[in-house]
Amino acid sequence: MRSRFSAFALDNSDYVLRTWHPETRPGSVEPDPALRWTRLEVLEHSGGGVFDAEGTVEFRAHFTDGGRPGVMAEKSRFVRHDGRWVYWGPL
Image (cartoon, rainbow, N blue to C red; front, side, top):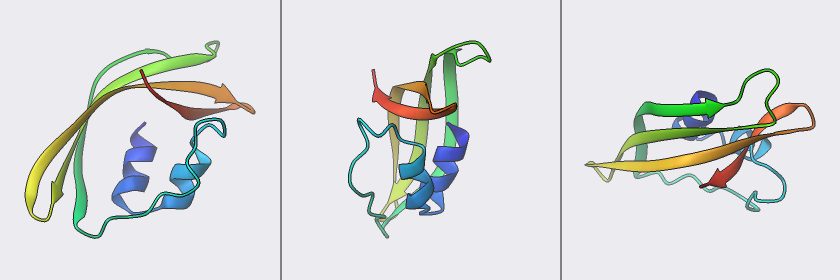
């Protein structure tokens, strides 16, 4: 979760797409030059351990858009795919 937030903050769309499950991944992720991701709060998580096949993370991602502050909140599902954790989508 934190690495994906960092990738969004750094406009690293290759990493964002690589860590997205192929069944739910969009064709592309276009950076928005007016949007700046500033802080991540992980509120709760479950699963995601060594022997788990999936997990969830509830978070708040803070940003500024054209200088105006905002918050995106989501509870996300992550699953193992080809031996690594990938983002499936929101719950």
